[in-house]
Length: 501
Image 1 (cartoon, rainbow, N blue to C red):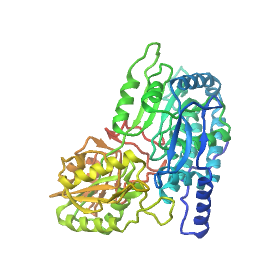
Image 2 (cartoon, rainbow, N blue to C red):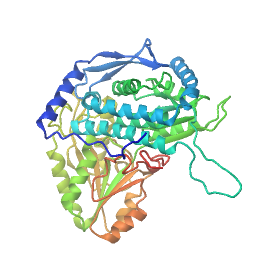
Image 3 (spheres, rainbow, N blue to C red):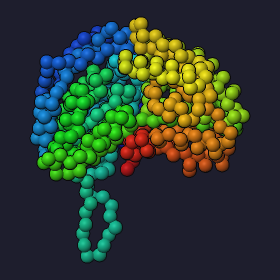
């Protein structure tokens, strides 16, 4: 099987009238499905329960996007049994056949790109370009991991020794659990699922209760691509019952999780406990977010820095684990930078995500709205409000882009992950101090530096302790294969998504 070299999926050019009209049509199609019901999928069978998860449109929180069956421990046990039964034949399936399924899934997603993206606009409030990038990344994961399966198939390189014949081959582990977040509900879900099943494992897929409809559509893509029954089991349900049951079960071999620090720490601890009857130590692949900083020195192009800060802090309402939450600038440029960032934030258009002209849509749900609102109130006491601060929950969960200046480095606003359109700014007397402040949290996911000084950029590469460091550009939007993604410290277990090894 000859597969062309991997390349990233192009983003949609919404400046073209034809593309805007096609996306509007996709939005209309998906709105026409509002209120539909989506069952669990266990061993290829559609299963309904007596309870439902209602997925709401955060732009208009009175509208139900869909109702998805809610699983409990009984359904979780059935799903594990189904995955265990499916594992022997699937793990023995030739790598080339598994790769073909992944590539077919990528082609199906490409054909349905606008429908998948439109669902995220309506279900989680992603503005058009953000939703389009989410789907493109999902396609990238399918294409990338399909090729990786072929690369890992068969004997791997070893140092030869005279008189002996050795082989090193990789084997599938068994039944695993994938728990993706709500903020990249197509891309990260597809990445966690595809990396597991295409390498010969079977899986229970427990999506976020905020985004179960797009998750159901991802499962449909894999089914249409020809994935056998039982290999992928769809099990929406509460984390404290279904999630914990799956993570702790003695038959699950690994857990892949992306989400909050608190939940990630809990999952890591639970997975590490050896349960009665368990015959292995589980592998936990955990990504938990960040408190990411952009450092701006006194040689930086401030126009470039303001653009990158704005995109990084307010893209998808700041609800990205890679988002810029802190800006640390040298004192010589600090006041000018604060004024420019505040002015740019106030120019962003806030509104329903389904409108093309919207820059900043709603935050994901009521809980997220109240959490971010509380941090804004805290920020009024810890810093100086220079832009935004307004919130509105009358029809949707709207928080205006908010900028605080003069925020102390050890304050809660500078230390805690907010996960909303809020950025805190502080000054530093020197570049060394700026880097020290940037490193001064428990996280280590992404970071950025704006500078035209080669020595300082080299120092940043050496001393800025993050998994993904960006120089003179925004700190979000890592490309699969090009910028493998994952961080240090309380940002996770250092695994890299979309890595070549």
